[in-house]
Image (cartoon, rainbow, N blue to C red; front, side, top):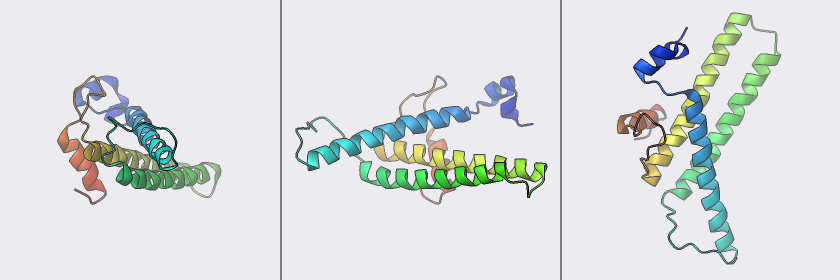
Length: 146
């Protein structure tokens, strides 16, 4: 049993919900996609106003988003194969699935950290407060970047 499974311990230790990471990823992903769409429309000569828009870090984030989506796709494909297969005993299968879920979460956290690092937006997306700089640095350190 993990401490995040017990609600009071989760509150005391301040561990974020894994669904928070996914929701934040989707929000950040949507922002990047919108900026990409606006830049593409502008490049194609459509009547798009870019005044007041901040495109800081969008090119790097586009590449990071592509890599993250590819990694998530591979992880989810492997998880599906594990669930459908009967070659591995139940305990090993559950352990592997848990490991893959953690890797999926790390990839999402990495993209979220890159988003906040490149966009410079340390906003207050959750009621507990700002995303600590140490958390961002730790998430970036997971993949060897600082």
